[in-house]
Image (tube, rainbow, N blue to C red):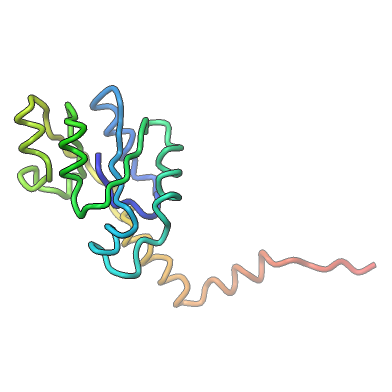
Length: 148
């Protein structure tokens, strides 16, 4: 499974991917790779932090960083039996598909959880802060002083 994951939500992709094989290796774009693909404002979290979060997921066995724009070279080195991507990808467009299938492997897509993409999460955070609702929350969570 390869991802540009930035903010880790509970979309459940790692569990679904792990169920398709014995060992789950997640290919993760480096910071430079994400910037080239998504723009200068991304990633929100550094690759070391993103890799640590992914590594902590019970379904993930290994995380491999790759600096290219696609995981083609990593897939070529690993030659997985099952290559997994989100269902937002057309199977014919999945990078490494030809190589995996040529070596007897299969390509699978897994359903994504609607509204859980990093872009959507960032959008919700921005909406919340633009509306100013964070001010009310900050007041209720703030410290209170006790008088003696």
